[in-house]
Image 1 (cartoon, rainbow, N blue to C red):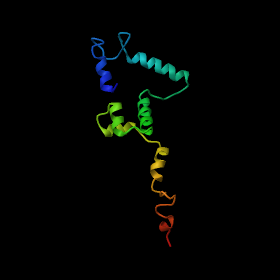
Image 2 (spheres, rainbow, N blue to C red; image 1 turned 180 degrees about the vertical axis):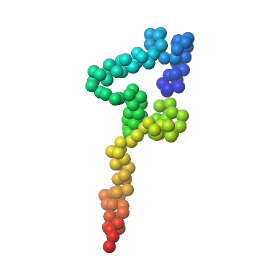
Image 3 (tube, one colour; image 1 turned 120 degrees about the vertical axis):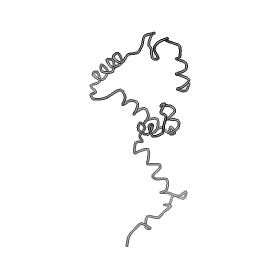
Image 4 (cartoon, rainbow, N blue to C red; image 1 turned 45 degrees about the vertical axis):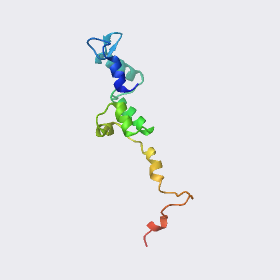
Length: 118
């Protein structure tokens, strides 16, 4: 189910609130308390819940999600906003960087000797 379809399925479930749990609104203080307790138990400091959105987007991007797919999954209206969230790890760029190095015969496409200075 896509994100817009999921949102539509929630319409009318509660006459007053959009996000609920057992018919009661989900409030920030409840989420914040559970979040702080989890951080304390795991001895993690200075980590905000919103950072998980950045991590989620980056992992999707690194796993091969296209920009348009990720933009739709994350609900961003523009590519520039999505780019603020999704980052590539440099390891993922290795295959792109080496594409021009070898021909099908296993030789360099551009011999390194052409780049030597006299």
